[in-house]
Image 1 (tube, rainbow over the protein chains, first blue to last red):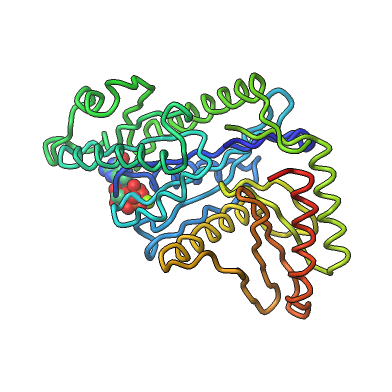
Image 2: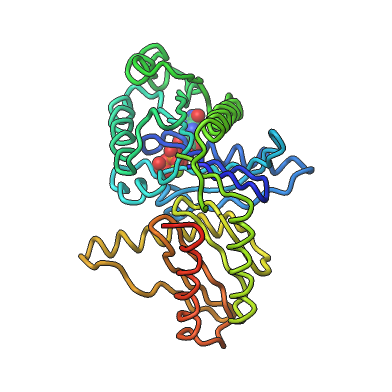
Length: 212
Length: 128
Ligand SMILES: Nc1nc2c(ncn2[C@@H]2O[C@H](COP(=O)(O)OP(=O)(O)OP(=O)(O)O)[C@@H](O)[C@H]2O)c(=O)[nH]1
Ligand SMILES: [Mg+2]
């Protein structure tokens, strides 16, 4: 649920990285945070990670980032990851509250295709918990870990992953490598732009106001 | 399902929060939605407001889940005591949460009374 503040002229948008355990959600957000920190012109907030001794996500990773102005409004993006491990269902569900845009980070390992599917079904049911569905949010897929040498570890072809997860929705998708950074910024730029666009359209067309 | 907050709503609510801070001696007040977006603020801060909102919403939601789990309606007091700063969380409506930072020498009981009356004023402006 994006927040448009007409006094401060700000738009706040929540983007969530979802996907099975170890698919690379935290690695994505760390890469983005590092890149932004290298930019000396922008003061960037700390990355907050609620995890198990610096490894597996327990609740979420989070940081806010300003995206500059659009139509005179300051855009503030909030980036979150979810915990992928099945046992963290309770916290995972909470992170989705008020989500505007989703990046589904799928693991390219052949052995993780069932986990991808299970996580995607889990996403739909957790959106329902918040009385939302995939049609209420912007969604893109990321086929992660494409850097892995297929002679060492079998990977699923992209076409197969598309068939498994994206054959009905046919939304945007990017092959990526969160460790090397390949298409990591492209993914976040794309989802941000699309989400902002849809929020602006919705708030202009359908003015849902707070206060009277 | 987006929320557009009008200019006069922001002005009115932030005035109420500012008055509350002056009367109660609290350090800082923040109203956030349950998704972790800051909506209204008053007082001096030397921390990242977006992060405080995100963590507070998560903290509140987690506590509520614990209440559900042990079949408790909800905990009536959500409060952390520090050496330099205390923090108090209060649900204002189904969708929004208020966080108040205040110094340990202030009375929690009095502050809670003030927060209660504040809650009614805010609800009368933004609705339920
Ligand atoms: N080779 C390769 N390894 C990756 C890539 N992305 C992540 N990894 C590795 O996969 C492991 C898990 O990455 P995380 O980013 O912690 O995964 P996560 O999705 O946040 O996992 P949870 O927090 O448990 O849900 C780490 O050892 C990463 O270095 C990638 O693109 N290529
Ligand atoms: Mg993680």
